Image 1 (cartoon, rainbow, N blue to C red):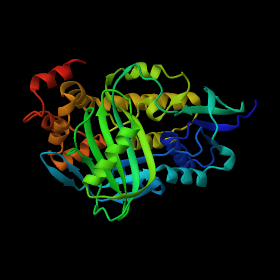
Image 2: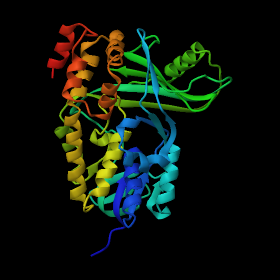
Image 3: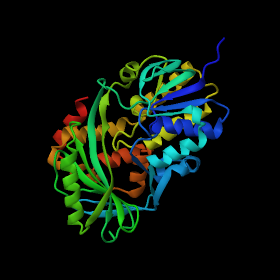
Image 4: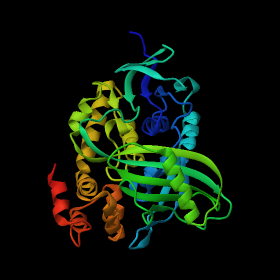
Length: 384
């Protein structure tokens, strides 16, 4: 019987598959793992942020090479209050992911700048007609279509800039909702990388995925000016549209993915329903894959799909809140829901983002003075 080229092929070299490759190289170095990316670099052009409480100490250790910036606290700003929360906040970057993967994967296992034209449970065909064979394939090529899911959207443009003078920030501002509200819930999100450098995102929770990058760039420049910051030069631009889960049928969604090919990342709806953050989910899947007793196509496919279904079920309460945000609140009042949330106990907020919300937390979140009229909030929840 002919031996395949690889034990595992990871189709798509983004965050989810990149972390699977990295983790397998760390704990299963005997495996032949190929990573295939259509772009010139693994990971694309992204910054992935997460809270310290999102990961276990062991997970923090193994992704440490990817983390470019660490802060011990973060700030939020709303029209009615500002607050600093003492939960660590970290940012990983795509250049560090690319470098880490190049360090651990042999050259003959790395494929960049090569589009994928066809995927089967045991092969990947490249744009130059090369066919790579393997015992198993994982497909992590972005979101794809998701007609079975009810989604809102988080869209953003981020400018990494060098300022003419120091910005004066010690900690990230992960939500500044004191800005004018446009197109749903709008906030500006600023990560201070150095005394005069920062990454400023103009961010929106909207009903549709359409993104006007030029408009958001203009608003980012206006925000910087309002803070007294003079931009000397723009180092890099990011833009993105992330799904925010409101409802849907995860079983039908996964069934729409090709049988026998394990989906990963956004392709498997593995992201935080409220924030759209995907790194903690990608870390968990990488750990899951690394601990499987065998990496056959059937085993991988079953394990990741089961994990995706469980993750979706675990986030049912988060989708209830999204229904209130997107369906119960008018676009110009959506900020009020987040404003009230950030007045709650700091440990509750920490558990919420880490996916450890308990029943007492849920009661606390849903009781008290409502940020929107009760009848609209209930109607949104009961609609499905």
